[in-house]
Image 1: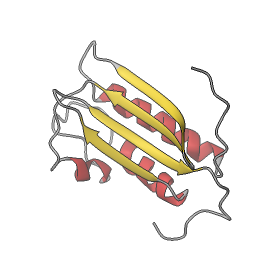
Image 2: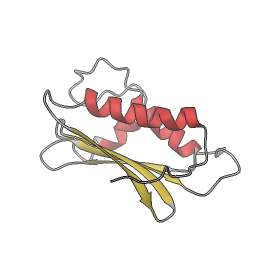
Image 3: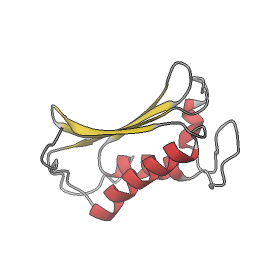
Image 4: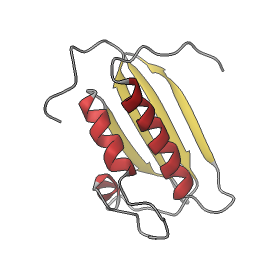
Length: 127
């Protein structure tokens, strides 16, 4: 499926960082031999990127902590600093978007970032 790039207003380097952090997080918190699926698209007035992995089972109670700096998930096997999704959330909010994380039945996580297509006058001052 091919589509034209979605016109999202924002800092290109920061928007690229969202994608890189989502992908790195999905790979880092996956099982050996697991899969990662990336989907992008446009729905109504939002551009989105969705990253799904087949990692460990997470509970709904664990989801809010994923956005906290220095949180590294229940397994703590990661060599990261626990900043990936915290940075994704901060950048997304600055660009007037939203980020959601949803545990998958049987294990893994779906993380989705929605960003508005319409041009904003600048980054949000309060997120």
